[in-house]
Length: 560
Image (cartoon, one colour):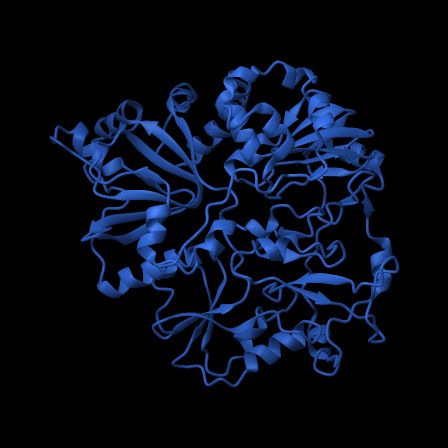
């Protein structure tokens, strides 16, 4: 049996530079001084939260604090200076330090046949000199900055954020992409609070909880509910009533990739026992569960273990069947399944009375007789289907939207896929032709372009980001500083660091310490290639597929 030592709450402080003197200074800041320290338990004092879950960051005028579309894990409290939030139309990708994708022309694609480099990872280092990066004065961490702030103000609608303003908390607590970009208008000092500390502040202080919940309901919840099919028929007044009744829940660890890597070698039964329970089989239903972010496992008791039936992802819901049967008068209706958190899950629990009034009553008024519960066919699956689901959930491949699958029955091990990838990416392939297998399928060691891309959390320059048009996760080589944050965060070890060379083939080193310059590399789905992923295009046996695991159980594994 595998063993696992539990991590302690503050084994890894957010910043090693947070001193006791800095904590005492923060305790005098108005928004923090108003917190009742006596409400916090001895095990989690306010001083401990500030020292271990927060850090002060100083920005110069023009520095970007957060970027629209980024996945962040922290909120920000302005201590001094002014910041601006860009409302519309928004900053272009190149200003945010992102990569602009352009498809190669026919002749550019053809020329690759005779322009193959025998030297791997060659870069034209001259282009790095124009990058909009600079180091912050206190930590040495690079920041993307805006070189022409007046032009940004002229072409965008913006709003000023003054000292005392809190922002970024909704995305941090809900694991959602940032909805706008924020930059420093003047020199500013900001207290950055990672989600663990923000969760504790919200839990133990009424003022912070009320403020965060109010903003959540006003800015995010109504829009989310109105966009769902279940509540799209409601007017603003009734929608507000549903929003006011909803309960916010988070389950599991935000940085789930840490525990996932530690639990890889544990058996399935032991892993399921460690998963936080959201709803338990046999309990009476008390509301509709709506998944806003993350994944949840749906399982039933089988002997001494549990069998996975399916999983829930963002946009899915559960409990409507049981609630509906109870509302229609059926006695002793209980939940048929147990729902547990796979990593981190953000859940809305809409109470039964609200569902009965605003959903079931509406169906009755419309003479709706063809009710189909959200997961009616959970128990109607073959043994093979169940084994595939169990495997995909256990390995967290359900996170993949462009997973590289190789049919081992068709694959002749010719390595054409590897060579095609290498030829397309500076002489180094962006994947390794091995991985976990199920039956005759293998998941290759290649970026899956995850639905929940934890690799993007913590990138200081936003170099790794999701392309808003295609949805793929890509890296801007120009703004990657080689910090290895993304590579260390990837649960599947699909990001590698490569030492680069200049156009003459010489290793590129840092003049300050003579250490090699490294860049993060991974599969980018051959974003600039007209043919799409070179691995798929080059396979002579059609053995390679790119699979969205969220759709894999509805035919994605069928033979072409």
